[in-house]
Image 1 (spheres, rainbow, N blue to C red):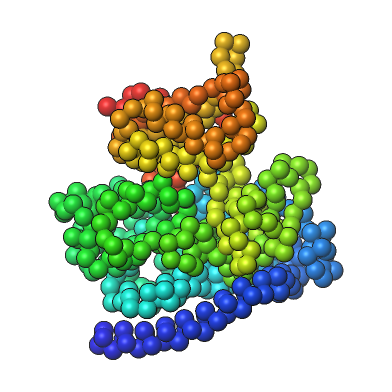
Image 2 (cartoon, helix red, strand yellow):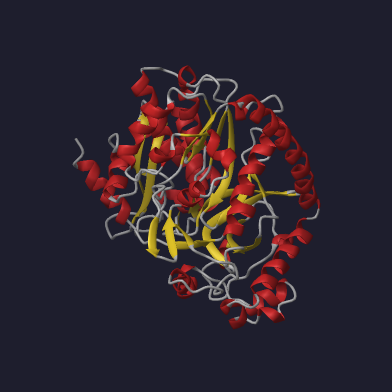
Length: 511
């Protein structure tokens, strides 16, 4: 029976792939026209909502008038509209019924955001992104038999929590799991009752126990937590290589953070020439981009998911009226804050991520950091993309491996020059921490001319100060903040010392 179902499914999926790849080629050829159609459709559909009436959507005819009619938004400015929707009122931000809300993971503040999720967004954005990812993968690997095995997805908490009888919230993964089509549920592992467990430390061993006998072919999840899971699998089974546990594993789908600092660790745990890694850019606000080429480090911006994109050059970001541009005006290599208008009723919403375009024919991007996570205490304008690459270079040159890190400023005083203080948890220590610090410093100078200028003569920024974190320090901090598993991540860069001081204190008292 299963063989008949698989044969029928593969036949249907092959037809879907051909049709969908043609559609993708079309928006690659006509990106501006595609985006203008998305904007027109979004505005037209929502013109009679409370937000649409308040901002005269009926008078919007193009991007220029859209910018004039609708100010840039963040969560604070949209919160009154979202709160009304949570209370059960409809037709506020979007005309379709909204009863699901994705709870954001948050960072050091612990403040949660509740992003509306519509049926349209689930089907035409999130699920569409998942199908497109697999479709592109099949296109590049036509001999694959992924759907003969199980798919192991490490999401966040799948617990559903109710605001009231009209609306509920949970991690985006909870909403996705709750609404999975039968063909996804059929191949997913572990069982739903384990996936639904909220306590990460209780769920982790049960996930291991229930999946090690399965024929897992696909892994998906945030790299840091996937590494924790894979190490637990090897510890439980006594194996040295994940391929000894899952010999047919061939695909890891990852997102949420830059993968490069983690890649060597994955290759050490999954020793296989047939293993493939595919990057996605998926968030509570929408599914934005997919790696569409084998072994590429950038992603294709998906232009027909019910999302209209705008971009703010970083130098404009903190101005009272920052300049925004549409897709037709972007340039390669420039850092932009991304702004989205989506089919859940997020209007000109600054999502907090920074990206760079790697090409504009077609439009491919890479995520470079967060608008709130950077180092600019001394005018150095260091972003996470710089520090990730510098860490990677320093590790290569000193034969080291890094698990996690965070950086904060050392503020200038009358007695000392300012600088950057690092806390690094190593998987493998360098032979010389002084050499590691030197290579890290030199790499940052090469990657960032502003940092290099401020380092000249040690006048503004002194040499980096490196602290070695004891094993498990970052995990303990996340546990203390009730942020284990799922999409939770350590902020890598900060312009204050709050996070660093908390971690240093925890590291000091770690046994």
